[in-house]
Image (cartoon, rainbow, N blue to C red; front, side, top):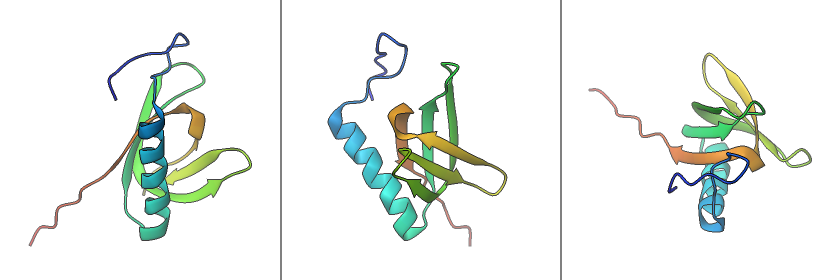
Length: 91
């Protein structure tokens, strides 16, 4: 994402970026791997969190991101970025 802001201060996300985010979200539900998500709140601030997508609410166009200590319902239209979290194994 180039950091561009739309007139309403929401980051601009092109179709390719949006499709990539949807791919990561779907994969998180299917393969149970964590993702990092940033999104715009109703107040106009940018929030972020990481965890696994546990539910996709297609009727309300939102996803449920869950980690050990928190849960967020995130509107798909407010997504800024989604990336896979790489976990390292210590031996």
